[in-house]
Length: 171
Image (cartoon, rainbow, N blue to C red; front, side, top):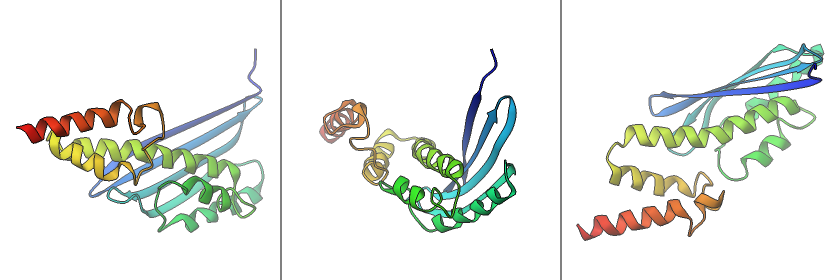
């Protein structure tokens, strides 16, 4: 059986000094033919999630006019990936000035940036106490609190942190 439509999104996060570089691709195939091929890359501050650089390209597109939507990503430079970012992307990149497919890719990249920042913390702070402190400092900023069952105020992650903090204070 032939697929009518297939979308794949691939995102990678790499450390770059005090920042993380996020690279993403979105590939759409319709009736086994390439439809959209979109690539984006952004440099994000580890510390506060600010987008320092952002660019996009569209190697594969259905209409030449589609490429005009690439310019809209520039409007995200200087903004932070924090709660509310998705709405901003929808209102800029996902608007009549941009491209809904590019917006989808950028929103996925922003979501993955949280995992990248978490990995950055784990790598940079091998000491458990320092790592816990760094994660506590960025939890609210990254929008993790109440973002899923594990990150609720009384959920397993926050509960473990509180217990570890109490244990360290006793020592």
